[in-house]
Image (cartoon, rainbow, N blue to C red; front, side, top):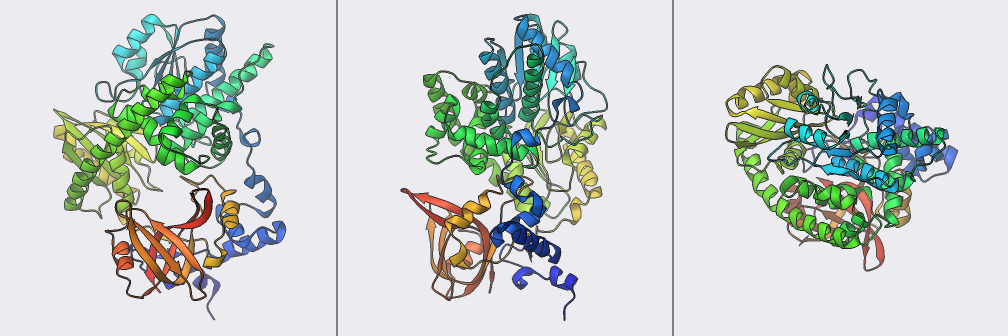
Length: 588
């Protein structure tokens, strides 16, 4: 008889190496026992109990987990350093009708953070100046000329999603007070701002380090409401603003844990009411005809908001999110949609060149990187993410222009890329660099490119990046096709939203035959599987046609496969059906 630890360590369905090169790993014995305990306590469906057990939910906590409320999970804003001082100064500017400027990053998090403040101020009868730097001409974060000019014309500057490392730029804003509301990793010293509210300051505990900048801004507005109530006044309805927090949290790939999960869950409900003019216009131009999900925030709406900062006018996304006029919102949404299409074309060209270069350099090193002449700085981050996903290695992609290169980096779980890049900057190998564990930006002198990447690879190797193999495929259990119902998928979705740090359920289906396999769209694969009892399972594999998995399925020749993926509801002409988002197969 096998010992318990042997059972837990077996490859799931004995798949040691799938068509994508991965070992399948199923629930361990302790997880199965936890799932059984949840089922006995709650009476919930077994697949849902397995998912809750994998997440680590205790049986007596299951009901609360399935219905997360912001009010139950919201941390005390005053637990963050400088929060009370920042909020008091912000409210003073509102009361005394001071001139306020908002300096924001050009991505979704920055735009949503700015829109939160603009919306709140507008509801309080106050207007503010929006300033978002040009990605190419000014780069990321506050710069001395812009800050000095804003300070001359304003009494208060609020930097959102940036500013924690901007010592020189904030020092240049002598004529105004500066507040920083950020989440990027802080250095050993803070800039000379009146207040720096950042859960990733070095003197913070890190308990709220999973917040994006919009989450930090929302906490300040919560504190503003508390201070207003203490003075006998009332602030705007903050729950109505959670759509912006949800969009930023997902688009910035913040972990969907704790209050972040509640932000997104309740933010999606707010968004479904279609009250925010800018998001309605964007959903319409993207032809989104269902209630939004976390997927839509990350892959449909987010990229369009980002498109302005990547290759167009930097402030388009923030202006759309803060728009109050339907005609202006429609025009901005159309412009962002067109820019997003242009961005995809540019990205494809850079991605192909970067992958070719990285393959020549080697994909099994602690760092995968590529640099190219004139690569657009607006797409290098996306391409770095694609390299990371393809290799399961930290990746850096740099666009060279003149004597410098500007790049973006993306990491994998367990490797703190932001700390390594910050170390490189402190050692003088980078002109500028910073970020957080999973993502960072950098500027490097052309003649320091090779030594900087070599040193970065060395630092990442010390964290274990060089020993990472292909990621195991973790499955939550085995299902029969007949059990994959719309009702089951709806039950599983109550554990969501799913995303970074909170992966959705993945199930395996054993010994399946291919009834039909055909190309749909450009390079996607639509497959119908059937089991030995006549039950069918529809599946789709995006971009899989020219992969080993796609080639095997198209030429299956009657072979049978174990298949794995995530279940989703497909809506077509009002009819809802279950579809498997196919991720992997292995010979049965």
